[in-house]
Image (tube, rainbow, N blue to C red; front, top):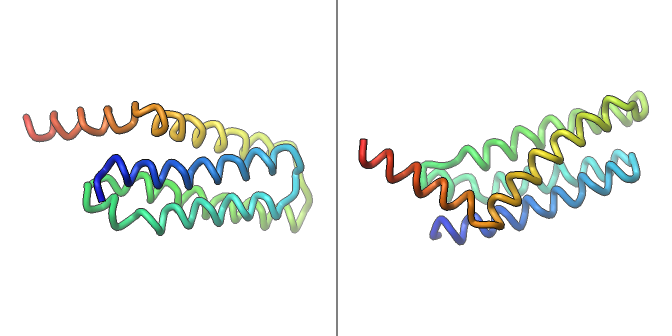
Length: 123
């Protein structure tokens, strides 16, 4: 799969996860956080091998790691209830993922990737 197509697929999955995180931030319902975690894990699993072929598996790995941490947080919330620091943590994660998603959808991410590859080949 071409890198641009792969980014479009990953970006669409990431945008779904961001929407789920935003829904959690509005509701505080742990099942919405679990859904976001599942969407991120799915995005990571679905794109890892193809991204690795482009020597850029970091996006998929980031999704898998974020999914694991959000799943842990959802379990904590279910066990002890929602706290303000949970909302702050998820808001920070959501903001980071939104920035990545925006960079992908604007084409900035692919442009930066291609510049990095050009530098690597020129070195």
